[in-house]
Image (tube, rainbow over all chains, first blue to last red):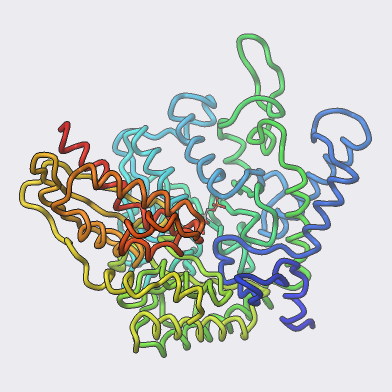
Length: 420
Length: 149
Ligand SMILES: Cc1ncc(COP(=O)(O)O)c(C=O)c1O
């Protein structure tokens, strides 16, 4: 078993210094993860040896590229517990979530024929989201509601920043879609998926899971979770930017009309009309990001080799350290559960009387990279009565020394601005 | 604290961010402007009442980091009761300073900036320039509203 120190050594960027020679303490993995050498190398090798457009052309490197692209799909499908054709490449989770929302819209507009009728929304139908959502899993549903006359409802959060089970009642007879996060990028709370899926099913609603944070930090099995759709981004799970995926249960993707249209997703095109390929190609219009998918393949291989269980255990330990350390600073209020159970190594917090920008600036001066702002989740900040926060988020390469450096830096911040 | 941070968070800035001059709404503003910094959600509202070509009253509300709050506070202190032309000139100078990447402007300009010269170091941090300028964008807009609204 390799130690965590060894893991950090796999990430070339973590070896750099910042702000005049200071060791980089990277605690912004929640925004985007650093990439191990294996991922960088896989991308480089693809680009230097096998770069070609996929599913077009019969020359050797086109074949190699297509094979690499589809092998990456198979690897990612296996990694998240899905079947091969249930994984659609997208550029990120945002695109994946929009793809579902626009699929529903296109069906509502009558596209997709009889099969797609199941996705049609009528005025008065309800879409349920939660107060915990990243804007990527909120705004597309607001838009869909506005365009179809559906009504947006939501499940509130508790004082601890978890979904309030009492609020599951909003899922009712008119609910058609329930979209919720598997793990919050602000509070770190991990959602108990089963009761939500069960309730959604009991009223015949589709479930859409934002697995952007969970797929990166927890072992996940989408078939087991039983959701209808799920979205995640490569860049949060050690893969390059520019690649992500939509998961859709096979029969649903099969029935859903396409969203982006154009090359690579069609069968027969006449001047009047077009027939579309089956999924996943139906949803992958245009020339694709092949090198990035190859990088994502390398990333899931790397994660599988380390073991997601082991990674989750390591991050759990970091969560405990972070929460214990933060609890010792009286000026600090954590926006999220105080206990590390069912919680990712993400700590967003408020420092009394000190604006997050100022907190982040002084930490940055010590080489500690955290995120400041609302982290694309304004409603949950509002629920905590703040507009912004500072967020430290760890990854597999984060060490206990990193967490200690962060806590020491934060104490200096408090000292500097509060003089106390 | 490192010298870079001492340089950034000058005492004037810290003081103004705590004791905010001109914070509050005006009774009957003739012009007002609301500005948001989309990266962090910080916001401010600047209100003015003109007295001929003068900024008879200037008030502001909002929330943000010490840089944005101090900038608004100093803006109020330096400009309330001054002419619109002076306000525009000072605004231009301050924008110039914020695009100087942390270098001082010519001594005469630097002097003209008075307390605002404390923001010189802010321009080294691209993410913070917007914080410093947010209130000034609002002021420019509020004056236009008051003149034409
Ligand atoms: C919970 C959650 N959902 C969705 C997203 C959107 O991901 P992306 O920006 O990669 O599309 C993010 C990341 O920003 C996230 O943390």
